[in-house]
Image 1 (cartoon, rainbow, N blue to C red):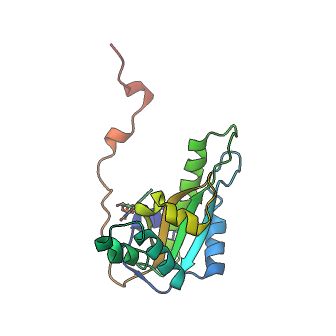
Image 2 (cartoon, protein in one colour):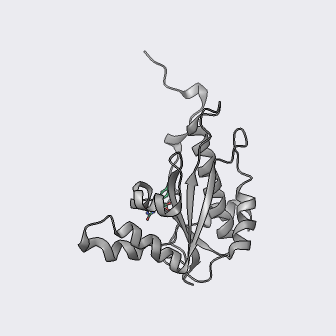
Length: 186
Ligand SMILES: Cc1cc2nc3c(=O)[nH]c(=O)nc-3n(C[C@H](O)[C@H](O)[C@H](O)COP(=O)(O)O)c2cc1C
């Protein structure tokens, strides 16, 4: 699959089943994704892989912070894919590369990984939500006080049906301009 095809056909997939890549295949794909632009080569990120019962433990941890009537629904969210890859942002403090650039580098790795997964036939979706702000999840996952959860990639295999059609084929004229056509202040 060429890069343009991968970019244009990747879609976030809500329903994901086995198989998901094993640890070795994940490491291989991450090796590609880690080649993303990274100012200062800081690698300000790490991934925590959760499968099987580990996802259940995380779901229960998230649910423990919710009102009782929401707990089952929230716990179930951690079981939507066979592999959850939690993305931990760990900025290098005080570095001349500012934190926002480091976060941009971490995001680039996540997107590259999604594209590589797609090119191998796997589906994924980047999920954020409650997990990112959850003290219980941070503790369970062993994050240090300076680390931050940027959500997780749900990873697996989408059902055999056609992926949802591309939506972002619209007019991008408002999103790019030439220097000569810039608005001139009056
Ligand atoms: C940082 C980030 C966080 C996201 N969080 C969620 C989320 O919590 N739940 C969700 O359903 N999708 C989430 N998404 C996926 C977007 O909804 C999805 O990418 C968008 O709808 C476009 O769809 P596509 O990826 O199929 O092109 C997130 C995407 C990004 C980049």
